[in-house]
Length: 245
Image (cartoon, rainbow, N blue to C red; front, side, top):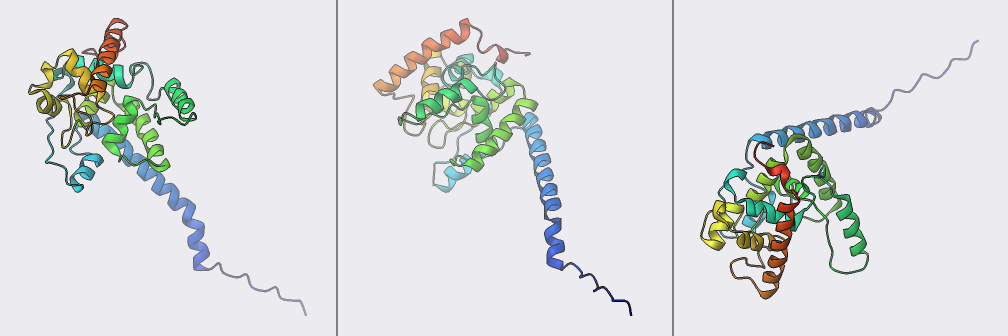
């Protein structure tokens, strides 16, 4: 009598579900990536209504938000020059990441001194517009992704315009227009070069430093930024921000 082979065991429901996980993860990843691209494309034409930092500040009990969106053409060119000089001198030349600045920041941080980030204006815009200010590898990885996207879908003028309109410039103060009125009692279009330098200098710590009542340290840094602004103009380092480009 021929020996009968044992019947093949049916895979359990748990194994079947486990086998589908790679496909589910691929679908979720592709959907998330597509939605992030749509989000970035939308902000190319629609001004961000709120940012993660604004929501965090509100939860912390900050004063009511002051923000008046202004197109780049209605913001003093002195402020654009000052921010490029202070934050990202290669803004017009890089594709979102300044590898020289990143390498210099890493070398500096290895000495044990005060940490330097080496972030470009594009990276800061990506963080402020789409993410949150937490220091973590997850947030940094997402920042890289969104930086690539805004460099791909936005012109440089739009990147700086969004940055200047959402960056924090004091308790409850966001954007160049609100900052100019809060600190100097004038619209952003009327900012002078020295005032623009003071606003740019306080960006790393806008709730601790005041452009309207600067300390000797802030005044000295502003004078240095004013000198660097002249270099920006002389060497055309902000040429990508010219109207029509």
